[in-house]
Every structure is written in structure tokens, then in C-alpha cells.
Image (tube, rainbow, N blue to C red; front, side, top):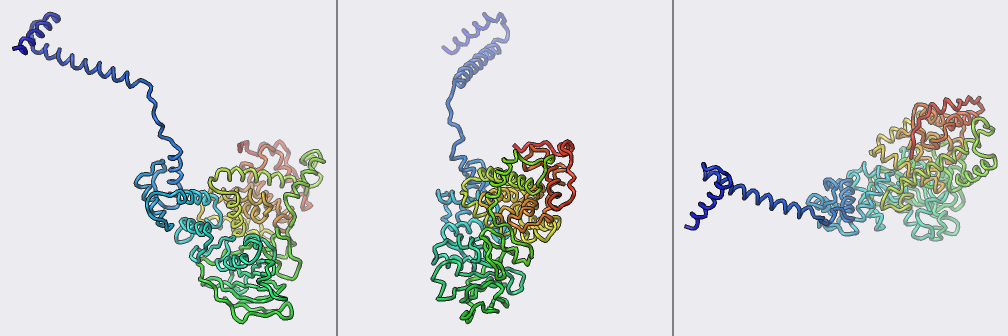
Length: 553
């Protein structure tokens, strides 16, 4: 009854306000629906006003998420597919972590411990530097993952024959590296210091198989453990298809010329002093390491004939390739550049085309200038590599230099075009990207010049040219013209200077002193003056027009 009277009242109200009698039911329904919709709209308006009130929300970005992205990037690099590095360690990322842990022999929990994560990320950073160890690992059966186990063994002080045939010392074979460790254990110098001592290790192909064989003279170690009253232990390692076989002798004052080998067995062909005793039989080699040796690997060497030993910083390895050229300049390039700087100041500034009096000094000024640019550029690259110490960078670059030793040895006898062709083949076979090789070489230029290690610096400059950055050929021309790290040869320097000049004249961006448009004309004139030819400098105006106006900032 109440419901019926309510409907009647509502209907009367609607009729009174609308002034329309027909379709009472329809108007009643419309009014009811309208009031409901109106109420919803009002309520939503209130809600919207409430939503528009300032709300403080926690940002999704956090240091933890940034660390997760680093972890995912490193996992992907080593072949453990973690998906897009979005910073969220989801199911796919956890599965990748478990794969990484299983590969390394860690418990495969899918959750990284702090050590496991730090090792993974720092290994990724080291791999970005590149170098021969990275190249070798990429060519191995485990690919780039092989680096993880190699660096794990390095960190724990262990080394295994299955590590790809690469020791920790500049790409030396496993058997040779093991002997170096054995000697270092009974001597004050570290293994790295021993390898830098002139005469400690000498290389030659003693069995004619085209691979380097190694001779270690323990008398250089200074340890009485390896020496008797008049002779010291000498170890000769001959290459075989199964690895390197060690032969032990007691002798003093010997070089590789005193030994000859047939396959893995060696004998002393000429006794250097009375009482020298040859070992009755060679010592069997430890478990062979796959991969063999890296041709031309040299860390420290002595001349092949009886002659005064070169200074520790020299490239006596050139004599291993029977080069009759004079010895390389063993003086410090840093010291040389200090002297050049003093002369430049006393002369009132750098030489120019108009006041070119001494071509050698003019090129010396440009050499030291390019050295400074290389150091600054490499230092900037190192700063971008996270989680790697300077000592690790230097260690990688020390291994980088010997890998390109065969190319260094050809500098005094091979034309620039032929050597660049060989370098390009090396680049193609390296299994590294052009960018990674370029970054590696740029960093090692910095490392080599900073430490006055000419082998590393010159090798890095060669790689720069090999990857197509021809303006770096100027550095090689300077080394040959001045005799740092290679025998002095102004004639051989001409081809490298011309390669750099041609690149700049055809539009390559200058990498050294880009704000000095007259440099190209100066190098043309000074390099021609070195060999006594008539210099034909290009006018400054035309030179400036030929150079691109790019900025390297």
C-alpha cells in the first residue's frame, strides 16, 4: 500500500514539473534512471577530486634495480640468456643465474651471492677491454664463457691444462708458465718481474716445426736453489703436437743457439764452458694444454749470439726473426719527450713549415704531442670500464703486446701496405668486433705509453691501423723515425707517414691535435727532409681546406 502511494506521489510530482500527462510510466522510469546516473556522476566527480590530491609515490628506480641491469647485461654477454636488461630479476633471469652458477661450479640456487655477482660483473668489465686472452677464449670450445673459469683460476691461484693452453703470463704455454711459477717460488722476484728480466727467457724455433720454442736461464733469477758451484739449471721447452716437452740442462752463459731439438727432445750442440753437463734424458712434460703457443710471443729475451744483453725495455725479439737491423732505441720515451719539451720552449714554440730547420726535432715534437693525445684518449676509455683496476688493465695489455709480436718484427723489413694487409687478416681472424679491438688498442696505447712499454704501445698502434683508423699510422712512422721500440729506419717510416697523410687528405677525422690545420703540411715536409729528399710542403691554406672540421670533444 505504501509502495503504491509512493509511486502515485512521484508520478504526480513528475507531471506537475513537466507539464505533460501522457506516458506517465515512461517519464517515471526516465526520472529514476536520470537520478541514478546523476548520482554516479556526482560520486565519480568526488572521487576524481580525491584522486587529484597530491599523492607521494615511491619511484620504481633504485640502486638495486641498476645493479640488476648490470647483472643481466653480464649474464647475456657470457651466453646465459637473461632477457632484456630491465632490472627485474624474473624467472628468465633466475634461470640464467642458475646456468652461470652451474658453469662455475657454484650451487645452482638462482640467487647470486655477493661474491658470485661481483665476479660476474667484474669479468664482464675485463672482457670489454679485450686483448689476446679474450680472443683466445672466443676461439675455444666454451667461447667467451671460458674466460670465467680462466679468471676464476687466476683469482684462486690455480691453473689447469684445460684452460685453453693460455697461461697467466703473456700467452705463454701452460708448461712454460708452470716452470716460471716453480722458479718464482724459490726466488725473491715475482714471476712477472722475472719475465721482464733480460735473458731470463729466450725464444727460437729449435725443432723446425714453425712454432716458438722456449729457453729459460735460471741464473738470471738470482736464486741459489737452481745453481751449483759453476752452473745453473737451464730449461728448454720444445713444441710437440701434444704440448711442450721440457728438457733440463746444467750450463751457464748459453743462448738458444747452443741447442737443437728433434720434436720434443733437445740436446746441447756446443758446450759453452768446460764442465757443462747435459741432462741424461728430458723431463716428461705435464699434461698437454690444447691450443699450442702463440707465434711470436716474447716478454723478455736475450740476443741469439754472444753479445751484450740489451736493456730490459728493448725489443731484442727482433733478432729472433734474423733481422740484421740495428738495435732499437732502449731509452725512455718519457725522458726523451721531456728533453724535446725543453728544446721546444727554448726555441719559442713548436716548429712550423715556415721555420722548419731540423726535420728530426720537428717530428720529435709531433711524436710527443701524439703520445700525449693517445694517453689522454686511452685514459678516458679506461674511466668508462667499471670494476677493473689499473693493474688488471696493464696485465691485459702486457698480454696484448706479444700477440702482435710477429708484426712488430716485420716493421724494419716489410712495407707498410703489405704489413697493413697482414694486420687486416689478423683482425678478421680475431673473432672480436671492430669496436672492441679499437677500444682495446686505445686503452693499451695509454697503458704502454704511460709505463714506457714500447712493445705494448707500438703493437696497439698497429692494431689501430689494422681496424681501419689510418691516421694512427703516424705513430708508427714516429717510432720508426725515432727508433723507439723498433730499429731506427727513416726510410721505412716514410710509408707509414704517407698512409696517415693520405687518410687525412681524403677526409678521415684527425685523431691528434685536430685544431692545428698546419700539422699535415709540417709532417709532409719534415718526413721528406729525414731522407734527404726535397720537401714540398702544401700551403697552409690548401691544407686547411683539405682537412675536415670535425670536433672530437
